[in-house]
Length: 296
Figure 1: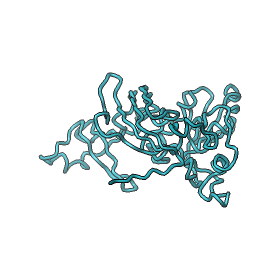
Figure 2: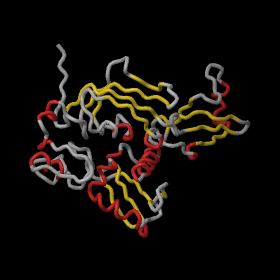
Figure 3: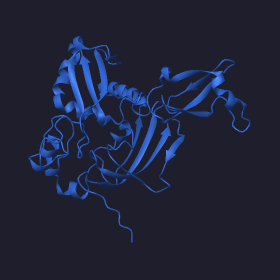
Figure 4: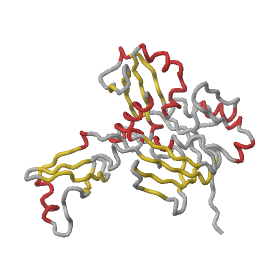
């Protein structure tokens, strides 16, 4: 429940463009005494459970005005973008990146995993390079920064397929590069080549919940040219595009047109919907291996 509450706030911050991928995020949890034992027991490993760069646990008595109430009783959350450099190996943004001269682009944890005995965790799953078995080396599991090639499909609970590449070439991406939403990506961790899964991803962990604040009203005058264009039909259900302050396209769906205003919905079209996520892993390349394509 705590992870779901955090994911919901992460999606809200992504919609506001405050953060991008989960690994650039820092999360502060403010709890009451009923949650204290559970959250404090995780300690440093909480960030791995939540798939963020930093997670702190604090008393709810010191929560500031930015802390958001969650669906979990006695829990408030703040999410912000990290100001630290990104580790090239684990992609976490950490204050200690570059502190080891021989590894200027790595965090201390990754240096320990490469050159030392490797880390140990009590709760969050870990796969250390220095402790890989023979089967891990031949058929590695998916971890942060693994290069994954897969077939996938997304469907609604009723069965309508939204997207699929099972009849096409498989897709390749690196875990943590932002190609896949964290709620889907987390389901891949621990899988190997040949594995197949079918999971229902709750809406809050998929494309987010419907946010009423994303329904925006515009004066009808702003749509005058579009409404008078005989070639382009402006009616409820059509998609219109705006520019955000950074100059990026921001699409929205026209929900209602009246004499004075136009209501546009900027929620993702799949917001509020549970998604059936089906995957077949074609190949996995270790996070410490560079993939080179050779064409002959």
